[in-house]
Image (cartoon, rainbow, N blue to C red):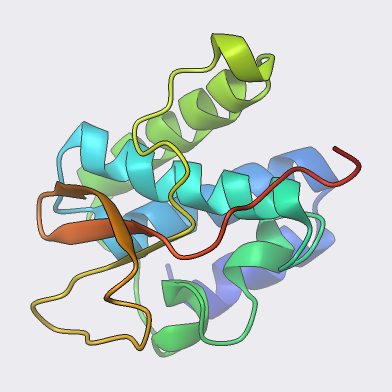
Length: 152
């Protein structure tokens, strides 16, 4: 199935299933070859950004913000072709959303405070010298800015 079709589907779904689909797609595109912990960390960054409101009010807004996550960086013709990795991405995304819906003190945070991540072996973002929260697999997670939930 092509990325363009998945993103179109997300645009016509109600908000909650759309966000699950957008998060699953992002986890798949960014971290399908990573450990479960690495995939959880990618999902956590997207959810933290959503809460901040700086990149939009929904997960779909966040992961489709210009040049932020894979859904806007890869070709719309990219195919989601690894069904096992896709199923795992869905599970990770839904579990991440469930965890993130808990009160802040009860959440399990894999990369506390991380607002960005990069595969530094292939990318050299301008913020790569920010505080490094963790390296998981080939991704390094950074606290580039302190994100606080809207209205906090």
